[in-house]
Image: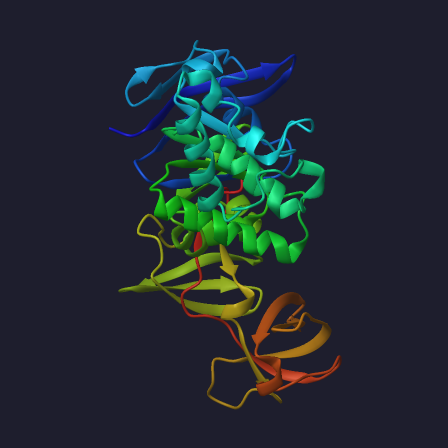
Amino acid sequence: MPVLRAEGLRKSYGAVQAVDGVDAEIGEGELVSFVGPSGCGKTTLLRMVGGFVRPDGGRILLDGRDVTRDPPNRRATAMVFQSYALFPHLSVAGNVGYAIRTRGQSRADQVARVEELLRIVRLGGLGARRPDELSGGQQQRVALARALSVRPRLLLLDEPLSNLDANLRVLMREEIKRLQRELRLTVAYVTHDQEEAMSISDRIAVMRAGRIEQIGAPSEVYQRPATEFVAGFVGTATFLEGEVARIDGASCAVRTLLGVLAVRGFRSDLGPGAHVRLVVRPEAVRVSPGEPGDGTTALAGKIVGLAYTGAVVRYWVEVGGTRLAVDLHDPGHSPQYAEGDRVSVQLPPDPPVLLADSSR
């Protein structure tokens, strides 16, 4: 039995359908991220699970029990809000122990539990400080410790790292994953940052316009996107329009503006004449100096732009009127190109293949 099962959840605000018939499950000890652009319904969905928003339809089951109409304090959940929502007049220990004090434990047990939680989130010795005396990352840890104090069956995290700078976000997402594994937490995580979701999640649910377009392991969503929206939202992609020319055993030939391309591992539901889009990821394209040699499958290209980010150089290469993004890692030990350079371009032999109407 999953810890969380959402069945046909719906919520609208006037004419806006914020969540439109969502079905989802989260298993024991699993971290599932809900990602998507602003306004896709991911935070509304999380707030319905936590009891802060009442659904217009559907059911929410926690360990098989219907909690759809229960208030937050009657659910085995705890939520960490984007703003952290710490009590400014209470100390760190006071914030962490706020919910514990309402549960009838002895004073000694309360103090011991707070000290244990502060140790778990690596804030030992800071219990006497006020929230405004802490860094953003430390405040985030206090909010996590407070949520963990009630021993939730399901921890809800709503954009928990959005207020932190880039380096601290990376450190904190590693910390959240550490806590999730060590404490065997079951977590529903909302973020608009696809890289964050990819690095932290057991599974990812990509949302669009109130619905889940695809849910699966990060590698599955990235390597085998179900729709063009998923392919474009999770990572960078160039889409090549094409038509299946023929099926050759375990591969197919796709006619595109760049010529007929052989594609391995195509979809079994495709046949000759099918209109498709090939998903070309920037790290899967290979470039080399000069024009392609005779008898090769490489294409002639020209560097039309570049961006250096340290570990990666992204080039934009024009090939037959199509602009491809190409990533070269470890630029200090890779060939370097300038705008205007002529290059030979090798496309990947196994790009994801989408039906041409899959963007809907």
